[in-house]
Length: 293
Image 1 (cartoon, rainbow, N blue to C red):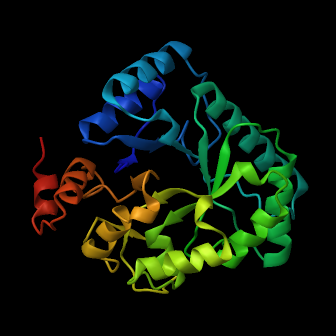
Image 2 (tube, rainbow, N blue to C red):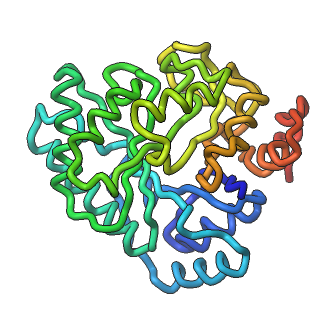
Image 3 (spheres, rainbow, N blue to C red):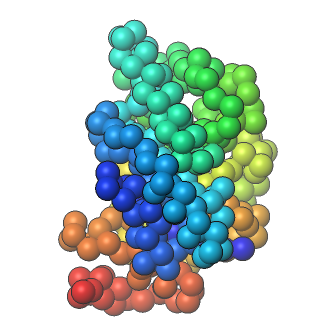
């Protein structure tokens, strides 16, 4: 089954119900959201009534709630323990996000591994695994996102993610989120995506893939810059991205669009999802998005 959606909002008044309604307006059958602003720690209580109403509608719409994804906030950095207080803050805040996922019934949490900020890769990998092991968690799978390799980011190489997984105690609650923009920017050749999947399988194992972010890139392969582009308008390209989405080896894994708003104002997801379902590139897509009412 094709599981295709996008990043959607999550606000104080509507919460999960609002997220669902936004996803449905795009023609999506899955989605990803932050439980609060990704750049800060401000959070508000989860309203059970809104969650239950959203779950009821999802059942009616045939949406598999187990495939809906939460993204952890950017401010969590488990890789750097140079300042013990900041490191513990990241651990504690990730613990809080896991508890919020549990309240929402979410079982998949995407996490940027973090940046070592000069401490070195080996120490960073150990820090990330130690932090995950410190967290009390019995149901939420943490999906380490593949990164572009910008600055001192951890996770731009599959071997780095493998090392983290090896050090995590509960292997059942750790996995991977592939990001096509990040993989390309990190230098992986995705032109034969099955060949890449073979590589991933040999290093980590395909069973660890829990989510795929399908993003185009503004940058050429290996640029290490991490700048997303609208679907089919970047250096990864439409045909390759479609082949990722429809790859049978990734069936029943949620594919999530994180492509940028056009002119920073207009969400592209309804039109990109339609284009993906048609499997035909629309060179007038951006103009259509600008003219949406």
